[in-house]
Image (cartoon, rainbow, N blue to C red; front, side, top):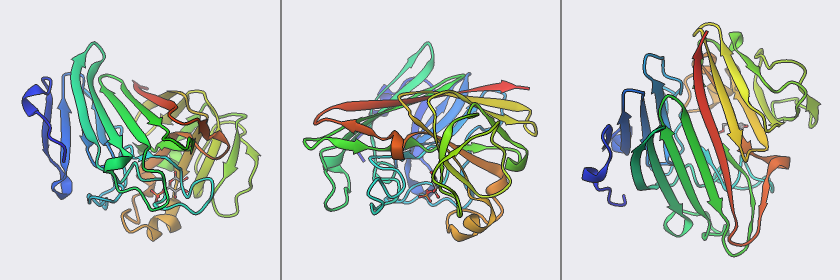
Length: 296
Ligand code: BG6
C-alpha cells in the first residue's frame, strides 16, 4: 500500500483496516458517514445523517486483494462486462480489482473530498492489455455524494467503456420504480432479451433485469418501503445500466447470498456498448455521478 500520511487527513477522516484486513478510509462528519476501500477505490458506504444506508454490500462479499467487492460502487474500466470484443478478462476490467492510492484529502463547502489515483504501470494489468492507462477518482462525501472517474488513454488511444456500478439498498426491488428512462432505447442482456428495445414508462422489476440504456439524463429510484427517493444525476455518461440478478443468477454467484436479491438494485453510471468513448493517445474522459436523497 502506498504510504498515507494519517496526520494530514482532514477532520472526520481516518485510515483503518476493514473486512479482510484491507485498508479503508472512514469518513464521519455531521453530514454523512462513508467508507472507501483502497481495493478498487470502492465506496462501500454513504449514509447521510439521519438516513438509512444508501449503498448496499452483500453479506457474502469477498474482501480480498485482486477480487471485486460485491456491493458498494465498484469502478468498471477500461472495459465493461467482457468488453467490446466480448472476450476480455477480468469481467468489468482491472480498475475494480486494483489497489488505488490516496493522492489527497481535503474538507470543503460540499464535504470531504478524497482523490485517488491508479497507474496501470503499478497494477496487475492482464497480458496483452495496455498498461499505460491511468485513472483518477474523486469522491466528495456530504449531504450528497459525488463520484467522478477520469480515465486517461496511453500511447495507443483507447476504446473506453466504464461504469460506476452502484449497488443501492432498497426495501424490496419488486416494489421499487426507476423513473427517468421512459422512451430510452436499451440493449437487453437478460436471458432471452432482445438487442433493441425502447422503455415504455417507468422501470419495474418482475424478473432478472440486465439492461444497458442509452441515456444521459437523471434517474430516480422511488422506494415506497423506505419512504425515499434517490436521485442520480450524471455527466459524461451515455449509458445507464439497470441490473437485478433475481433468483437463479443470485444462486449462481458465490459472493452473493441466495436470498439477498430483493434488497438491492444496481443503477450504473456508464459508457458501455454503443455508449463507449473513443480516446486519442493521451486523451482523457471524465464520468461523474451525483446521488441525493429525499424523504417521501
Ligand atoms: C452488470 C452487468 O453491470 O454487472 C451484468 O450488466 C452482470 O451482466 C453484473 O451480471 C455483475 O457483474 P459481476 O462481474 O460483478 O458479477
